[in-house]
Length: 305
Image (cartoon, rainbow, N blue to C red; front, side, top):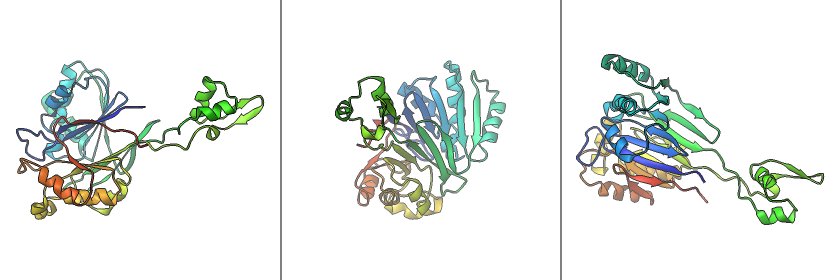
């Protein structure tokens, strides 16, 4: 069982409030850290979370609006001053390389570690043995990306009673079968599927970034266990959402419902909402399982049965 956690470092849009910092979300999986957006001042929340400064780290920027990227240089510097030595991989839309290089030059920033910056297009941008990360274009006022973190299939459940009936001794042979290998006993071949159930899906987490809703995102996030979606406005500000290329909480719920998402997490709230309960209520009229993110919310994401 591999632990998978979500931590929200910031949940406000454009303007921070006394309770909400600017946008930043982290996935922590098996010692790896994946950060999505780095709003201004994010490093303060990062240090509060006590995640650790020297984890294997990948950072993903959705777009180059200040509330999503102005904290990046501060975070990099904080990590360096705190003794980080491992490299950091950064991914983002066209312009991210120029943004980082110009700021490093202008600030005379010296880091103790390497950074490797990648400008990305749609599709799979990272593929590891146990997970992939994909991106697609969202629909915002500038070039902007949505992201999908998707674990690969896990082995099925091993049935020890079947193994014993086939006279397979406990130990290494059981492990080989559980990992999909074929074995031989007394000249007889035994296939993994004889003692192991069908493979099980991994976990799937979608992050919308700033966007208007559209069919492309329904397809992209289809079947996600968790969808974290732009919920800048409520029903009463639908016109603002359209004009500013954001979503209402109800529109986020429509996407989640059509994409058959299990849990919708609303975030990126306009500072006009001191209490976001009304946004959750409006979303729940469309999709049952909805919660609102808050700063330093830390939750484990369980496997599907």
